[in-house]
Amino acid sequence: ARPEVLAALVRALLGDAKRSVRGRAAQTLGDLGEAGARPEVLAALVQAVLGDADSYVRLNAAEALGRLGEAGARPEVLAALVQALLGNEEPVRRGAAFALGMLMSRGWRIFKSTGGWRIFRPRKRVYRAQLATDLAQLPPPYGPIPSEACDRRRRDHW
Image (tube, rainbow, N blue to C red; front, top):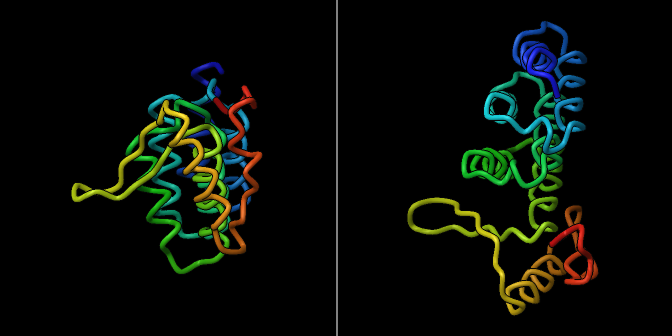
């Protein structure tokens, strides 16, 4: 994506008075996938997830972070999504769960350590099997996610 297009979308996400414009800007940034996953875009989406006054915008920003692909698997993104997942608003929690599920479906593991939340991508088969087990045990409305989502043969996820 061209830098001026990304800059316009980021300005709309962070500065427009209308929630519909901010929400649509978040959706569009997510639709760009890895092509739009630049540091300024990630920072704007994280800021929207954590600080926008409207839950519709926070929901769309959270979902957008999940659609950014490999470039979106960063500690600051994870921290924002976990914070949104633990929040009080159901739509925002659903958006965060979607985004975290997208990361996990690509093979990323998320865990809490003494230093905070961490993200890594296991390479060993045993970890992929554990991931499938973990996802199958997610409670509604976030799961269960079928084990086929973690199937090693699905090249688009590994």
